[in-house]
Amino acid sequence: MSERKVVSGFFWVFGERITAQFVSFVVSVVLARILLPSEYGVIALIIVFINIANVFVVSGLSTSLIQKKDANEEDFSTIFYCSLILSVLIYILLWFAAPFIADFYNSPHLTAYVRVFSIKILVSSYNSIQHAYVSRHMIFKKFFIATLFGTIISAFVGIGMAYMGFGAWSIIGQYLTNTVIDTLVLAVILPWRPRRMFNWKSAKSLISYGWKVLATDLLGTVFVNLRSLLLGKVYTTADLAYYNKGQQFPQLIGNNLDATITTVLFPAMSNKNDSTVEVRILTRRAIRIASYLIYPILGGLIAVAQPLVVVLLTEKWKPCIFFFQMLCISQGLTTVSNLNLQALKAIGRSDVTLKLEFVKKPVYLLFLVAGMYYSTYAVVISMVLYSFVGTTINILPNAKHLSYTFKEQLIDILPAVLVSAAVVAAALPLTLLPLNNYLILAMQIVVGAGVYVALSILFKVDSFFYLIGVARSFLKVKSKKQTEQTKHETKEAVGIED
Image 1: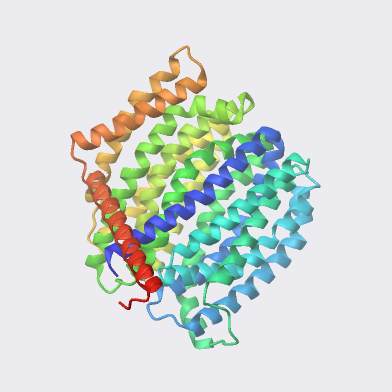
Image 2 (image 1 turned 45 degrees about the horizontal axis):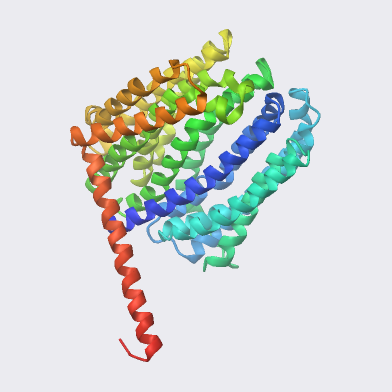
């Protein structure tokens, strides 16, 4: 697989993720201005349960299709039926569990919310296999097209319902519409359809790899969402809303970049999984580029947190600023951590990733409980500290499996860390100026971006010039293809054969 194809896939997936998350972010801002933090917190609780249940459908089984080099039509259909059966069982479980969830949080409305929102899981059983097909064949433009339709239509639905007074139902309506439209569009534009084919041998082979990935992701998802479950129970739904809203900003950047790199890099690595040298090269390049892109942006978000929250969400959301800033640090560590895990999965060591979860999760629980004992602010600090520990644990195995040591990884991310620190140092003091929040925000963006680019050029940061070269190459290829297509169409129009 050529580097050009990987880079082309990166641009399409990044475009898809940014489009999806930008629209969702705009909708969430509108809803945050309409709804109270306590109302927003109720939906945050529901999303926790849906995220956990969704792991069974979208993780592990579909991942095994991407990892397998020679996955065929029979494999895809086999995993589809496995995923469908699993999603039906999970939906039934959530249907009967909904009243107990509502009683636990003393919120009667949760019963209906959970039962309706859980429909998303049934649709995802098909959608996850579609995504696996796209990733397997590196046709990421299809992602972009489907997401464009899904996000735009769901935005109108979500905002429309909010202004019509549907409250929390508007968020559920947006999520469900997005998933359904995305699935329908992919069903139209993809050549793959589930067929009446099922192979027990294929199922056992794929599941033997996939269950370890599923178990790993499930443990990770359960423990990450355990924080929200406990915050909603021990404190208030408003406290949970402040935490989640503070988390939303860094996740908008971090998760999109992570998802982009993972979506493109994992199939590329899997195609080279018989050569650890090539996987190491891809992993190292990905860590350098990802850290260079995301760290200065997260640093910039730390600097602009105060005026940004007030401008977008109004004064009532100011308590989320501290969470916002702390979770930017955590998100930066998560990016490096995830890339190391993807490399292990690509070379078929899903067993190692599962073992790592059993090492990390007791530590996570210890940090969480310690923070929960004091306050919500202590919780977020404990989560940042855990991010350092968890990332270190995820990095260490690749010294053995890819000969990519902890020291080498620190050296690779050091330029990004230094540039980010400079961005924060230059932009953060501007919040002290006695000026309008809009003006302060604009000044911070200009100063931060200027420092980012200037230092990259001054210190000749490798990733900066690599990305510039890749962008130029990508644009030249696109321009050349368009010119050739125009010439071809012109010849056809006048009846001249090529």
